[in-house]
Image 1 (cartoon, rainbow, N blue to C red):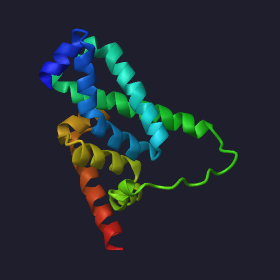
Image 2 (image 1 turned 180 degrees about the vertical axis):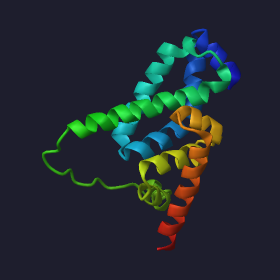
Image 3 (image 1 turned 60 degrees about the horizontal axis):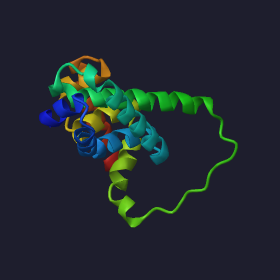
Length: 164
């Protein structure tokens, strides 16, 4: 991945596309966990990709690409959540049918929805994206001990939800 980042920083569009494709699943899981809406998640991911492309040369240390990109994604998700608060829905939209493939992670996602956002986000970054607690603390701009506490409380809350 380090080589792809360096090539992308030099303006190689193919390397950038490959790099983004390798991160797409993690970006989707993070965005959908935060936004709980596929369309909003897709918008946040698109905006993240655009910002990454525009600011790729500003990344000083290629080892931190994933952390840098995730921070941008979280900021875009937060922007979307702020915009969403300003919009008052006129009518409820009917649920659309779900394909059988979407049922694979339904139970896990339902448990995640039962968590406060501060716990859910840390759990997604740790378990889904595979980030270390130090990386999460850097992304969220909180202390490492706070990340570990939120992980412990999130696990505890999920155990309570699962036991029901």
